[in-house]
Length: 282
Image: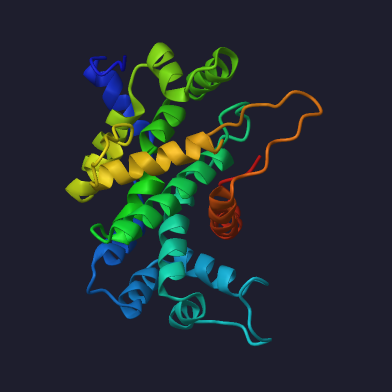
């Protein structure tokens, strides 16, 4: 059972431990979720932040995207090279991941695994939303990448406690949610919803973050879409911040075709934005 009745001051200190989302990340998400927005609107927001502009230009001039010897020097041209959807995903992911540097000394809870899970959920949620044709794909991607921010706050507030929860999850065959409930003070979903409210995110995204473990049959809400995407990633071994060690000499099973396709998207974006931001430093 989640410890939602823990002392309010301790709850606040946990929320305060996580640096706020950068203003540029919030602006990028606002543009992404506005169906009337254009590539020019996105370029204007990216250009307003020198750090994000530099990261986008480094990405578009990397070997993966460079089309000629001529270097791309403007954000507007970078968005043409990337395409609007890819540029939007790169901008959101880069703006968020660059704000949260890892604790390189932490043993079990790893930021690189955390972001790989978050991005996997983001891409899967966007895919499910597109298939329903009832939900905004950018909102699903945003809710997916942010769904575990409450856990990141818990890690920032108590790295040793999060490592203890991961150790219990691995050693006792628990989910990390169960281990958190047993050992720590808060439910990460509830904390994530509180963070999303603090950041003044849209109500639908707040609810999706707070309820991403509550999917029910027939539910097509954004919360249910994120929950289904999260379940898919867990079932395929993409866990939120850790991996379960295999016995010595045992190779991991190959991913399903759906998971392999998803991981190609995720790992491509990880290579660009998480590596670029330094968020996967060991």
